[in-house]
Amino acid sequence: MLHFIKYNIIGIMNTLITMLVVWILHQMLDWNLELSNFLGFVAGGCNSYICNRLWNFKSHNDKKTEIVRFLLVFICAYGVNLGVLEGCVWLFNQPFCAPFTEFVSQFMKPSFFANIIANVVYVLVSFTMYKKLVFKK
Image 1 (cartoon, helix red, strand yellow):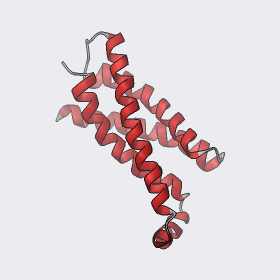
Image 2 (cartoon, one colour):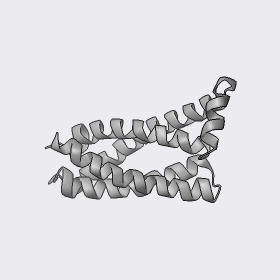
Image 3 (cartoon, one colour):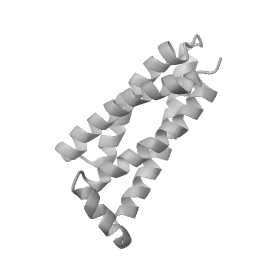
Image 4 (cartoon, one colour):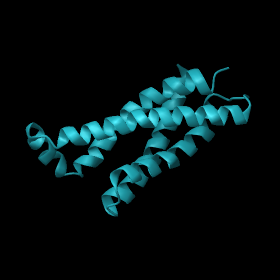
């Protein structure tokens, strides 16, 4: 349970880093959503590896093997994130979602809100995979 609590503290930092990058690139500079999302995840992912290795899981595994595993898990979890992101963007563009989309548009781009949903899914998938596959003891 302690690992999950620490993971969520690190996850909050990662999410803030990721969302800040996406906010600046997509919301403010109007960059492509997928590129902004990817670059945000790279920034958050670097922070994630360092903090999880040193503080959360206190890993002493071979760094080379661990980094390869980390990247594989990152790619898989990011793939899930991207699928959820694209699914939400599609959903928000459907006529039956128009009232919800109009409401969200008062605060942010609906695509940015889709990014928030996709991040929640990413956290759940990545924690499980990092704990079981990357930072195992």
